[in-house]
Image 1 (cartoon, rainbow, N blue to C red):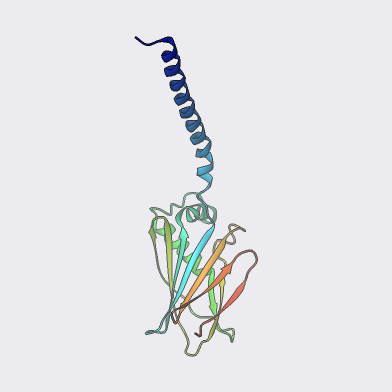
Image 2: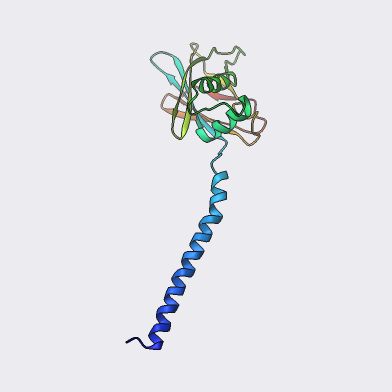
Length: 183
């Protein structure tokens, strides 16, 4: 037989457990709306590798797929589906291609070739190539991808040359930034 003292103790423990559960469920429900807005990062990372053997520049641009999804709707209309529509994927790759430029110290632009694009969750990758002229010790780059969509967009670019990495950071009103290619 349970005494009234033991019965009250059991009821209090049960009430405490229900209270904790209610608090956890409430916290989770408050977190849900915030989580839905947290996915857009508005940050991209590009890597430029100098292939020592071929003297080719190999550019890889990595964008968060969620950012691309919103940008494509803004740029090309709500009907564009970046996930399943190859035409929308190609259109975004062309958009990237039009917003990346490299030039030599003499002001001559390098010709960038569009080398494709692919989705590899959670990213959308765009690839470019260019021939690096002999004795080029410095390059300037312009990277305005998605900066016409969001003023908060940040585009980081890592140049990997001679086992060293040099970085450019595009945000705000940055236009042309330069990088040394010599060791």
